Image 1 (cartoon, rainbow, N blue to C red):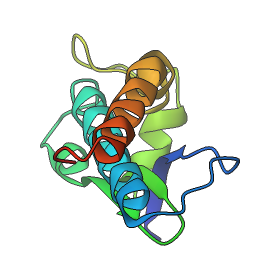
Image 2: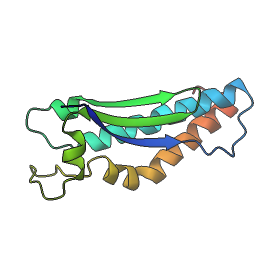
Image 3: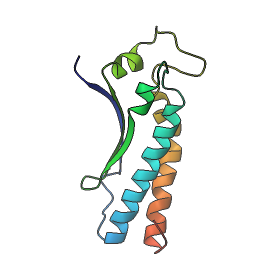
Image 4: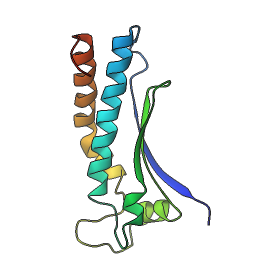
Amino acid sequence: MPRTTVRKYCRLDSSVDLASVREVAGAIAGLIDATELLLGESRKRVPIEEGTLERSGQASVDEGSLVGAVSYGTPYGVYQHERLDLRHDQGRTAKYLEGPAVEQAPVMAALMRAALRRALEGGPG
């Protein structure tokens, strides 16, 4: 069976002009913070039988394009994510990535803003 991936992206607003090394470093740090938060929140909802799907979760940041992603890569990840009719243990759900992405969007945006602000103020990223 081909490997399929469930993935959500965090993108820095392309209208932001990132000119300095500090700004880029801050943007990267913010994306890392945001994607790690989303990974942690989504892992709380991933359906678990043996834990393979949960362990396949990854947060990543493409520093060149300033795009962060959280993905789960198993042959059945998309099936588990999209099928609303499947039964899951208490607290585990379909839409295990989409739900937290929507709910945590304001927090992720705040994390990205805070990291960028720290970088611009010359503090640790």
